[in-house]
Image 1: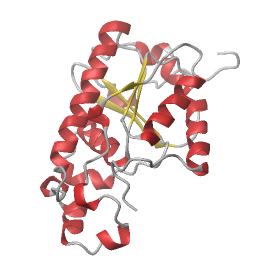
Image 2: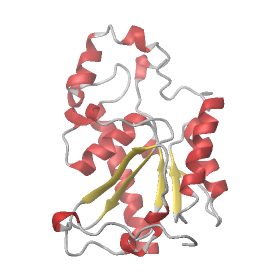
Image 3: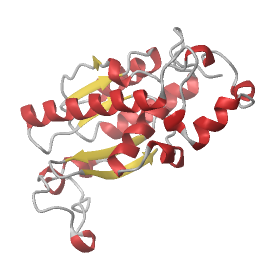
Image 4: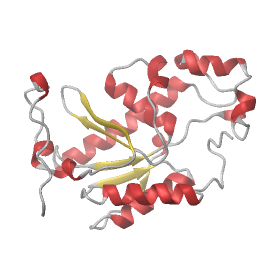
Length: 220
């Protein structure tokens, strides 16, 4: 079923397990802020991430990160929706897709990217360019933000996969965004807090790939 913005859609047992693992991974990094979509399942996720943090960080709701407004498609089964003519447009040319009674996918991308960039600028201004913060949102929203960061047209965003409770990492700089990770569901994230990621990329992208993050050492 396409849940969309329907009320009462909360994490099930599988979702709680996925979110707990994500919270434990993110706990390796002190985060400066957590912002979340207003949908219940995202607010549950944000609270779990905040609870696992060593410091006191309280999630803030950001409507720009809300699930896409699928309008009349909400609550219908995916099998049924796949028979609609609009389904092919969503798959092949999402920039032309407008959900009946809902929003255009272009509008979805614009408001999500604006929200992420606005929060990143605010966190950077308050905590410095190496500060890490968390945005909790939905599959299509995250894919749209990643497409923007990768310089991809929205029509190509279906090539990006985003699983529930996965972690993707984008570093914004004055020159360009850097996509550091996408769709990760396991693995250490403490490298995000290390000095090699705190520095701003004033000299641009590393030619040849650079030296990478500091290796993980016992007791670090």
